[in-house]
Length: 251
Image (cartoon, rainbow, N blue to C red; front, side, top):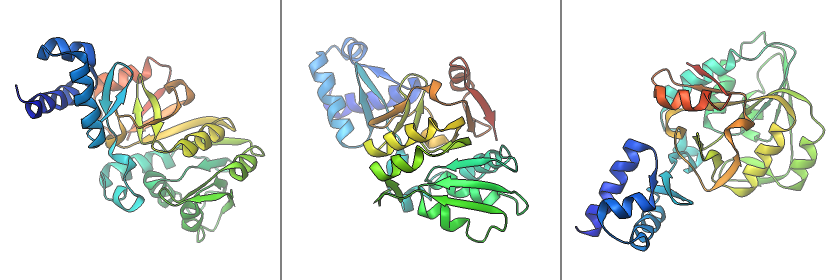
């Protein structure tokens, strides 16, 4: 079997099973685990999968640039964002992470909603300028241009002075075993810090993020309380998340 054929079959199995194990692949193709690891390494370098200990997981497409991500699964993002907006009540302090789905979220906040929004995303803050009843607190720091959010020590310090009701966490991957992941180390640290300052953490997960992984771990699934997904999300995935004690709401 040609290397290219083996790689394609690996990707097909990954699509069906949601993960592959190096040992199992070496038996299936009757090659060494070193050969399989090389295949996985090359596929990872092409952005086709995310290597993890013992094998690989699907790679998230949500690590593209902000402008590229805005065009991904737009309708699904809107549905998930609208359902997320319904979870907010007047009088709350709400942390809103940066991202394309959370950018959709703020468009569904009603004009009579009186809340305080805390964010490290200049885009989120600017998107709320015209809202008549929302107070906005923008957390400063070094601007990470890829995601248009602030990061660093100043951001962490600003976060430490907050007690919020809800944190809408942005992720690039959510997987029952790999947990919550993102494409940047500092962003992962900021997201953990925000989660620690909120009574409840919610992920708005459009379909390109589900059952995928990125290089940097925010935390395991137990870090969040709820995930909002599209109505046609695979039921076996939903059960695997609910078994971790996380509430799954379909939009």
